[in-house]
Amino acid sequence: MDIIKIVDERMAHNTYLVIEGEGVILIDAGAHVSKIEEHLKMYSPKPRLEAIMITHAHFDHVMELDNIIAKYGCQAYIFKDGKPMLYNIDQNMSIMSPNPFKIKTKKDVRIFHDGDVFRFGDIEISCYNTPGHSQDSSCFVIGDNMFTGDTIFKVEHGRTDLYSGDRNQLRISLERILNDLSAGCELFLPGHGANFDKDELDYNLKRILGEE
Image (tube, rainbow, N blue to C red; front, side):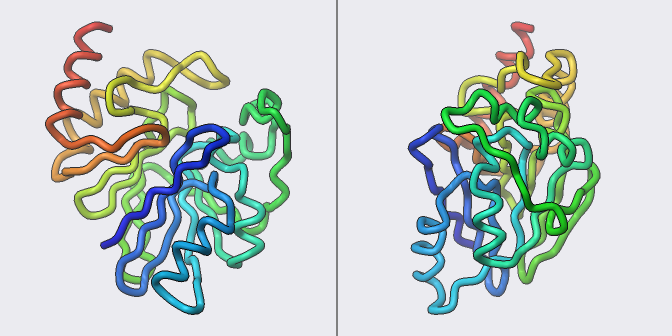
């Protein structure tokens, strides 16, 4: 499996390309199409993309969603509570961005529920709702990799002072990640900043939860 991190300079957010055999998916949609295309062409002269998995609806993670779907004709998946937020510029915080925008694509956006598992080619992805940063915040597990969105970073957890953020829910989500969801995972890939390993996750979650 190859995982390619694409960091967008506008909001320093991470978008990930995951490629394994015939499976090609994107985690979040914050990177320019040109950057995605550049990396995909290294694997195939005819780049394709099967799906976009959205960790949450905040604008920095979906700002290129329309363009990516238009380019590749793929479908996007978001936790059920996030779909209404996706189209509301106050709820997805686009109103706070330098260039507020509205997501237009609707027919190609599907929902998932906590615990759903999808297969795209050779990629199997398990989806878990981890609310707190936002109601729709989710983590994805592919093999021994967990994509944590803005739920947990290398050192700190995500903020809870934005729309639908909830500190108590976040604590429950962090406990679930520590005690359940992270089992078998070795690498953690957040929505912002550097990746981290299981020892770092355990250490920091125990520290964070001990301070709460």
